[in-house]
Amino acid sequence: MNTPDLPAGIMPDYRREIPAGLLARQGSWIWHEILQPGVIRHLAADGSTLLTVRILLPPNGLLSAATLRRLAGWIREYALTGRRTSRQGFEFVGVKPEKLEKLLAELEAAGFPAGGTGKSLHQVKCCTSFVHCQNAAVDAPSIAKVITDFFYRDFLQQELPAPLKISIGGCPNQCGGGVEADIGILGWYESVPEVDEERFLAANIDIGLLVSWCPTGAILTRQVKDGMVVSIDADRCVRCTSCVQVAPEGISLKKRSYVDIAVGGHGGNSYSGPEMAAVVFTRIPARPLEYKAIIDRIEAIINYWRRSGKPGERLAGFIERTGWSSFLEAIGAGGVEEPGDKPSLQTNFRRDLHFRY
Image (cartoon, rainbow, N blue to C red):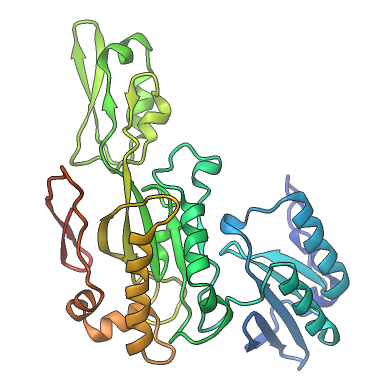
């Protein structure tokens, strides 16, 4: 199939990275089936087939140069090409059928098991957090590792009612995608940023830039004797830390943090269309590196769904069928109040649910 080059620009035409035989079948795929965990067979309109092998990568898909070379070596020997998935896993595309078993054996021996397809736990997705992000309230990659270790069997076997995707966002900005997963872990700071007026005035901060960076209009300006300062409306603040990044000399944030756990998010065109997750557990301590409080609640969600979910029923559909009241009661949903915290009633308007923060 002859197709024109894409317009010239900084990035090369992605099609140059695709082998000719694979590019010739572009747009002709009509079906796919999962032969075994991690092994997918695609069918094209002309009757030809293509094998893909999906493997589990370390949290956040972080790869060393040595690992990248090893992946490249497997591609050269066993497949047409490779790609990193949107969930931070990796796929070998166009695996040679006669070499499939040998590839799977090598992958398992090297610690890169095939799995995460179909009715299983897919790669646990997370943001980078403290690896190189200044906004993190919790360490998402370490939470991802603990979750993956605990539920490792569910990655390798297709014994869940439907696919299960868990995502972790280390702060309210949600770069890790927690709000769109079947189960989402949402990192939060305990308190709103605090303004030190003396240091703020001494730093000669650009007030206009600072105000413009706040996504919710929570930063309020105020004239004092020595100049202009700001205050932060706690009711509007979502603790995204943008103000701390603009004015670190005068605004600081206490590092005490926790997570919320949400369920029922999903993308794509299945069920009732894309939908954001709803919070069911609030103010859960995130204590490295055990995370028992988080694991216990995720396990309660998965076990109830595993027992009562129908084949092919994602968490969102399961909850809608059983009802939120029954679901919350079955998983023991409720906030965690740490010593000294004053609970206040919050409402999840999408679900009309009420929680104690």
